[in-house]
Amino acid sequence: MVDNPRRNEEDTSVTAQSDLIDVPHVYANGFQIGVSNADISLVLKLDNRPTHVVHLSYTLAKTLEKKIGGVVAQFEEAVGRDMLVTDEVDKAFRALADSKAEPGE
Image 1 (cartoon, one colour):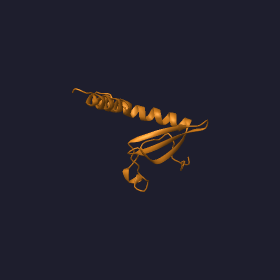
Image 2 (cartoon, helix red, strand yellow):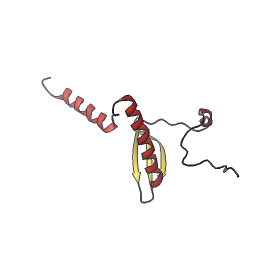
Image 3 (tube, rainbow, N blue to C red):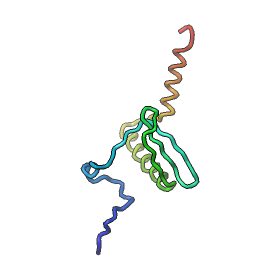
Image 4 (cartoon, helix red, strand yellow):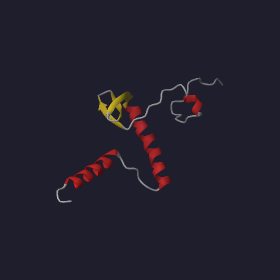
């Protein structure tokens, strides 16, 4: 039997951190999503400024959504609480700012 030299695309595990040493690393604290009839564009942002664009097929975007959702669900179960999403954080900060802006307080 001949080993297939191609990595199994379903294998999402990282075997060693040293495998990633030459791969660019990106951090984002925001994002924007664009869609077309063929794919999805994910614009990563840092401090509300675009830094990188990732183009994904719909199939890969759906797979990524399921995989990331599963990892987050495991984390939430481990810590015993749901993570806040950015919309909830934004709403809380707006409410706080509105309460401070009310006259007479």
